[in-house]
Length: 115
Image (cartoon, rainbow, N blue to C red; front, side, top):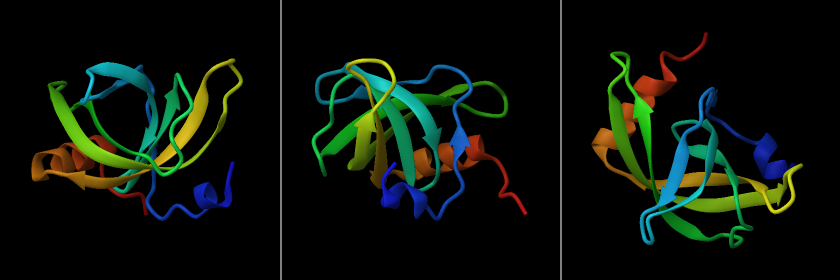
């Protein structure tokens, strides 16, 4: 992976169940959530993303009571590389916008910071 991947500052939580990520502009699933932090995310995407491309995406995260919350955020591609499966790519994104509700839901899903 690129050097940018190694320079992450926020701790990430890996998705342990499938969480589809939808491009809200066309309502199509673009990939699956790999991991998430307060500042970025990694996706397994089904087509090569545009380098530096900006996307408006939505996905759902469960809270502590197992209720689903729709998260809608703006993300910008930082890096990508081919995955083991043909036609798929691992891609890292920086979160560039999101409302207070999205931030709270992401924080709750991530849980308390590790010491």
